[in-house]
Length: 173
Picture (cartoon, rainbow, N blue to C red):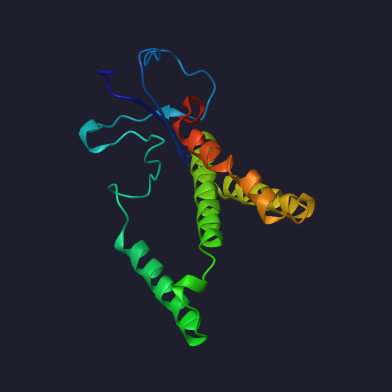
């Protein structure tokens, strides 16, 4: 854009707004508002634009922080202890249920980050997404009759391509 963003702030409301682009006129009068121009110097080289492929504004750089990886590994190790205590082996675990749970967590995370980019990362956005997913799960469990093994394969085969299509479709970017 080749120009510094315009910054407006309101000490009374404790808010700041940044406008960038060629359509905003810094000399235009603001009219009756609590916002006033903030004169500061922006360094664009240090700021990475938020995008769908990395929407986590709270992380300094891309990657998984150690504070996240260590508790994950600890939970994984602690979950293996009771399985070993009762004699469950890796072959006895229902891996398809494990991966369905992992897919559910990925879908929930994608929904939260997408809506956080759209509406802002607030507790209301997160609670709406989590509540909507829980309602969908409740409806699915209430409306799905017990299926035979053959019918369940027929019903689950379309889901992997449909889930993959949501990651590559243009309307999700």
